[in-house]
Image 1 (cartoon, rainbow, N blue to C red):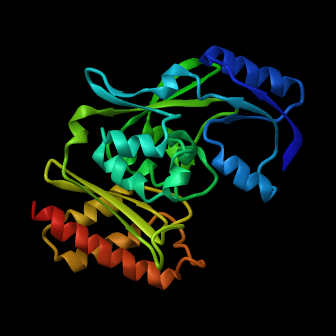
Image 2 (cartoon, one colour):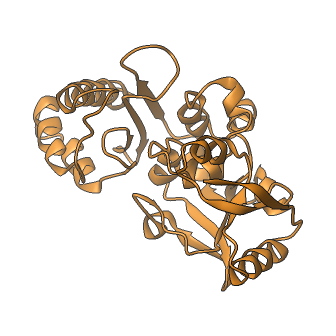
Amino acid sequence: MLSSNIDYYKPTTIKEALELFYFLKANNKRPIYYAGGTEIITLGRLNLVETDALIDIKELKECQLFEFNESYLISGAVISLTDIEEKNLFPLLSQASVGIADRTARNKITLGGNLCGQIFYREAILPFLLCDSQVVVAGYNGVEAFPIEQIFNQNLQLQDGQILIQLLTEKKYIDLPYMSIKKRQQWDTGYPLLTIASIKMDNQLRFAFSGLCPFPFRSKQMEAELNNTNSSVEERIQKAIQYIPGEILDDVEGSKEYRLFVLKNTIEEIMIEMEGR
């Protein structure tokens, strides 16, 4: 739970932030990094977060970047979902992010907060999975970049004390044909039933999913079946769902059977639209 007496720190460099974290840990504190804070507050009220020291990383300049360099789009960890939407440098990311919570919440929710949070939807990861992005983290070994498929397995596999700094996405992916569809059982806000993002590259479709399992994922086995044009769309979808990499959710947002029904229809909608382009 959240302590009634929380120490607050606001470092201005990555080095300072890391040193603070390891110093606090060595002194029996429970530090966590803080940017938007929406999930910390929400889960803290439910006794699902324990901390007595917050390290605010919003002033780390490397985390604030949202711009192109010669080869990549740099997406910093502390940019808000609203900034992503308004600047629209990565249209697929904008579309995947726009339905996360409501506008007021998106003003505070950061990219890093969405990707590293305990709430399992993490829809903002889907475009980066599709585009083979690089994940930049800082820790004991300094600042390192990892292929996303190496460091993301159901969630970001960060070591204790590591900070998510940026994601790097090659420019060649930014303007590819794309679709992102979010399905809800009811209402226009709140948690989704299912989110599917897709891009078309080299005449092949890529798919990434959130809300189907208790973690977001991209499955190359599913993609292989969905791109097998020797079979009908219906047959391809039926074969692909055999490779769903986890238990299908069955909760208040929708039953397992309903999710599968929506999944099949949404994949078909995307395939008909994208294969026709």
